[in-house]
Length: 288
Image 1 (cartoon, rainbow, N blue to C red):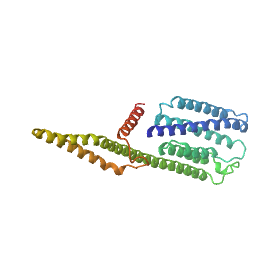
Image 2 (image 1 turned 180 degrees about the vertical axis):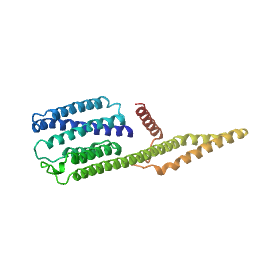
Image 3 (image 1 turned 120 degrees about the horizontal axis):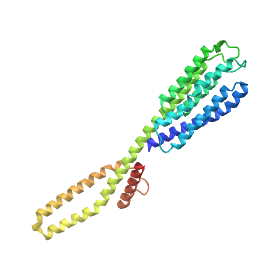
Image 4 (image 1 turned 135 degrees about the horizontal axis):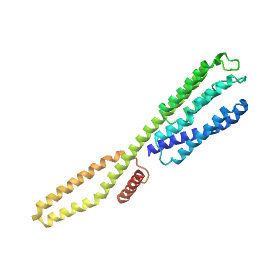
């Protein structure tokens, strides 16, 4: 059950991440078309990126019932990685556009989005954040943006690196919180399993109490009426005594139970039937 929930969370992060990429790139198709009039390369590439991400979304939807960590991580990376060449090309075109702009805006937004939406693991998300931060630094120095008259961002590329650090911190916080949550869920599951086992022990103890009393009375009557059968009666008495000892030991699990109103008196047969039903449901979930 925990593994299914983990895969479900990862699927939602990959799906909504790619959905966000789709809407963002659709908007930038028209923005780039207006900014770079007559230059269709970047709008066309962004449109191709949209088509690619739609294919990834289709794959995620078609495989929702057969998820795997490799599929989820691959789908998330497939939607994000094409931004690297697109951002590089956009910054290059802006240097020759004669316009005033703030560079690396896309890098900062994508890194923060990775920190929020990446599947909960530091390797994938951290690697993607590092790739975008590194590209921002390379573009800043290789394109000479520090001395470009159209650039209005005096603190770059350090501001982008700070964004990358914030994104990595957000991702690390998510991973740590997720790990703590999993440990708490595991402890709770173990406690619930112990409580069910304790209730089973007490139900068995109470269910065997009346038959044991009947056997003890029968042994006493048999001893009175058939003294010649003493060896057999003694063997029966030892067997009953051993079973009684075992049932008394079952009562040692009582401290594990959290008693609620109405639990002080329960029917052993009903309790056993409920436990059997819970076990049947658990086995059915494992089969599927």
